[in-house]
Amino acid sequence: MPHKLVWAKQKGYPYWPAKVMKETEGTCDVRFFGGKYERSVLPKMYIKPITTKIKDIQSKKGAAFNKAVSELTIHQKMLDNPTEAQLFMTLSKKKNKQLHK
Image (tube, rainbow, N blue to C red; front, side, top):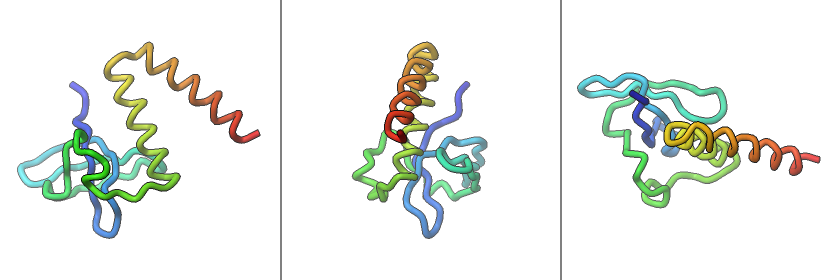
């Protein structure tokens, strides 16, 4: 069974896309998308379903956030259709190469 996808918030940071690695009665051990794939054990009050609209959680939108959301999208596509995800990743890599020329 795949990990549950969520928006998670650490103190001093905006909500960020993450997946729940382990869940207890009052906490979630999450791994954040993007960057160094940091993990944190957070109280459940700082966890929101991934279906929550980004504008409703008032997250900052910078390059790191956009990268994390892109990784989340790829992860969701892999769960839904592994073949489509591979095509998406290939196209994304080509687009990135063109942007950095």
